[in-house]
Image (cartoon, rainbow, N blue to C red; front, top):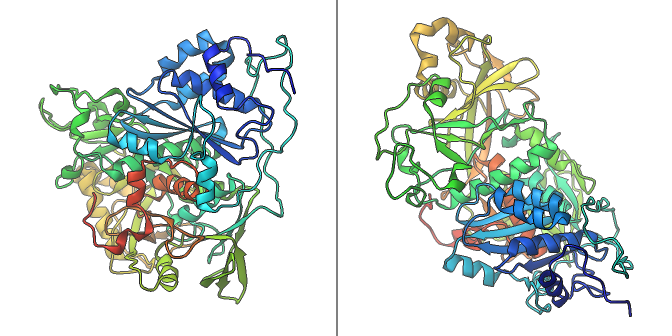
Length: 625
């Protein structure tokens, strides 16, 4: 028997004792040998309990690769709430600082906060009510300060029947045996995890498609230790709808804060975290902020939720603090910067414009490339999947060249083409996946100082994105059209005309005849259009100034993605129908799918996740938006 481990300096007695009760301080800790572990934090002092557990986990060699912590609080923590903890317990300074940076925009509901470079996940429910209680009771976890039980993560994994690869090597725990030995955390840097190795026993998952959906799924699974083989029909990734030159990342706003609004906020939080680490700012993406206009006929879905308004609305339309981390009523200066008149606004009115602080533009192809850049991901192009079938405990996927690809599990992420495979697997199911063709129009930016071109994106009737760097010159883009009648990615002259007409409605100053010369410089007056197919390396220029791009997205009648395991085909999973919000929703939906596969806590409210399940189409349901 080893001597009892001493409590590190500056650790609270109650936290040390509760960790001992959780059997995380024994010679063989309860979480030893597990790829992931889920621990529910206490309601009182949950922030300090989080820091103690994090510090222990960083230094314990037998700890799991991924740690999930569950917590709930009546009021969202602010950055200032973490500062006293760092003062009282200096050993936790770097951990508290990372938590403070992650705690923004915590509106009522469930939030997934990513810490320790993605290896530690905090699921934090803000607020009270039946939904919170249902989430807490339905998420298998061990209780902080109590011995492990059969309801914990081991039981969850058994139900999923998933063979997770080993994560950390099991080795002798190097704990201090004297009180004078160094504490677990005393301001030193957390131990860096080695990169996962290619092990023969590591399960292989096949991901079909390498657009935003497929690339996101591949990355989420690779980060959990799976070997992932991505099969795609194109000669390069992101050659379908995800080849869009540039798109928006922005949250949706609705009067009832509906599922799509909550999903887009959670998705934006996740894609921002990825971009800050893996993409080049101002080249691949830009968190520039965005002005959303309250266009006629669109306001019915753009009201502020009543719960976010003060009891007595004022001219400032005071939102709760957390909401103001996401969006605020647009100021007069922000309207003027877009070349728009300042709207009149009475005391009781909804805002005539919304400023999205965290929104901006991103190049989908750059995002896809960054997601596929992982040592456990293999990409195979020019591989058109024709059919698939189960063979014992594996799935055999056949391609057009007659080759067979084997994997323990399969993720179907083929956009509109997913319907054919799904129908073949389950011919009696209903798969209303709809192709939705969209076309965007762009042109070269006018010379700087010309004055009428907005400096930031504007949406509300389509979306206008200025100042996007391209190989030839900075460009602006506007779109897109919504065409249910065609399933081919061809550019049409009438769609260019539609885009230019709608752009004039969104930003009338750009079409003002008083500024004809400037309009010509921006390519807003056009002649003649050609027709071409999407998938070329660079957008084709039309006439002297305009260029167009078209792609076919996948959507559903309820405008929500399709994410989850396929009932009736064990080992097959679906991630598709991201619609026109692939940048915002891709990483979140992939994290949800990986959570299903690995038996982890879901990153979103289970009630919302239920709305995305593949078999929700068994009965006709009314649009949720």
